[in-house]
Length: 439
Image (cartoon, rainbow, N blue to C red; front, side):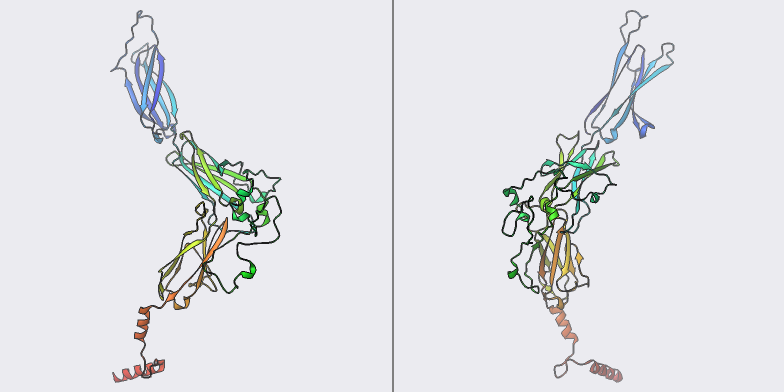
């Protein structure tokens, strides 16, 4: 697309040329558009012939130049040649030839996203995880493939009627792990998920210790259940043994469809059993090869679990009756500064009771509390952020101050008696009835 294309029509005849006409064939061959005409009556070629009784063949070439071809120029073209009949100059003999022009268009965009997200983190059950690569604008359809950490992934064909869940988790002896991840001490120490309670690497080829451990402090130093530490961030690090003893098979599927401009859209999917320990911080790339590209086109994503959500509250000083918004502004970035992928699920709960609207939990990056009452002063809210690679949560406490405007209105509406106490309802009704009688 954008190139200048030259179409040539070569023919040989011993007759007299009448005309040459070029057509663009459209609408599947049902319509023809004339794009060039050569009329020999106004531009005659003469041949030097010694014996007029002997005719010689003349070679002709008709050239049509198409500058900066676009996708609508794609399709068949026909060259029609008219030659005067020998017996009668009133008759014209026609001949034609055709050629098909294929206009290539490089892909315009490529993106990688996770299917069926956001989703919860599941510590005790294997989850299928699917990456979807969408490539638009290419013609012909491009070749799409996936890489993990720069290495081409060996994939197995997967059809829509096939269910990956039924294949189960293959053992190490039955599966062919694609990624060569020799777990030397240097690589193991890069991930906290492989460290035991005494900072000893957990090898995948050994049984996991029976003891369970977390990243928290020893049990004797933990706070009591009725108290909470603020700010608090807890990252789930416990995984069952099946996670450490499995190597996934990657299943690949792709579909393509034609867009309105004649280009193709390709959707390629990569599905496997997710391993939250090995797959966290793994780099996946979708790459495209196309004859109109000088080098592969690619898009990359790094699988990353959420870590330490940062909360903000507006207004910073909440008063009675204000609408308070608590929002997740971002996350604590690790040494690689990766964004959280796939998109996490945000869940809000109130510690020790329901939310202001009576619900147990709310979803979204922002928690809105409309017209907060004074009773919410000191209430604590938990934000849980999770994706299939991990879960984390943090807390914030709401401090509600008195509203001077509301306090002033309340004093204005209340009527004190001589002793300084408020008038009771019966006395107020008595005063009202006396006022009516006097009127």
